[in-house]
Length: 396
Image (cartoon, rainbow, N blue to C red; front, side, top):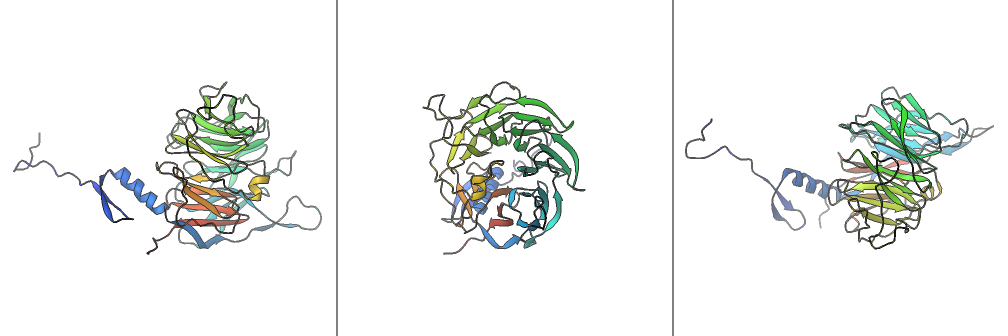
C-alpha cells in the first residue's frame, strides 16, 4: 500500500469549480463540473439573438404537379434537423416532395445546398408532401416520412436503401434508436390514431399501439432517456403516455389534477409535443397556439400560464404535419424555441419569461431545430433557413 507523502499530507485533490454570477459579479461558490457546464450553457443561450447575415438562398423550383408550361413555385420548408455528429449539415424537407442537405458549418454565412433529392411520389396521392425527417444517432442514415411510406436514406450516397409502405395515411414519425438503445425502432403515427413500430433492422412493422379514440395523431415525441416510452397528442385534444411493453392500452392521459377523466388535455387539437427537464416534463402546443406544461410522473398539468404563440399560416393550414418546435431538453431551466407568425418566440419554460435578446422579427417561421453542441437554433422561414445564435453580452 502506498504511503502518504511526509508531513501527513494525502494526494492532492482537484479543486472544485467555482462560478461567478455574471449579472451581479459575485461568487456563487463551489459546484460540480456538471452543474458548472449546465449554467455555462444557460448563460450562452440567454443571449441568443437573430443572426441577420446568416441565411440560405431562395429556393425556387418548377412545380412537379404542374402540367403544360413550367410553373415556378416557392418550395416552403416543412421540417429540419441538424446532424447529430458534427453539426455541419442540416436535413431539410420542403413542400414539393424534396429533401435536401445544407452546409451549416460555423464558418459559412450562406447555407448552400450540398445535395437535393426528390422524394418518390405516392402513385395514389401525388399531392402528398413529406411531414417529417430525422437523422439516425450516428448520422449514417436519415429517414423521411410521406403520407404513405417511411423512406430510409444512406446519408453518404443520398440514395434510398429501404422503403416501408404503411397501411394508413401517415402524419408524423420519430426515431427511437439512440446510441445505446437495444431496440432500433421508428414510431409512425397515422390518421386513424394508431402508432406503428418499424424495426429498423428488418424494415417491417413489428407492433401496433392502438389508440382507443381513433383520432388522427400529429404530435409524437420519444422519451429522451427511457426508450420504452413516448407521448402522443391527437386531434381530440388529448395527450397520452405510452409504453411499448403494453400495446393494448396507454399508461395514462395528461389532464388537470382536479378535472374529470372525460375532460381533454387541450380544448383544441394537439399539434406539437416535446419532453424537457431530462424527460420529467412535457410541453405541448395546440392548433390555436395554446401552450401547456405537464408532469410526466403523474400526468398532471403544471400550474404555469403562457401567452399563446401566433402560428404562421402554413402551420395553421397544413394538416398533414406536426408543429415542429424545439427545446433545450436537459438543462432543468429549459428554454423553448417556438416558430411564430413573427419570428422565433424564445422563453424560459419555468417562468414563461422571454429572453432579453429574442426580439421578434417580421418573418413567418414554419419550424425550428436546436443544436445542442453550438447552442444555436435554425428556423425555416418560407423557403429560407435562418439562424439564432449566442451573441456577446451587450454592455450597459
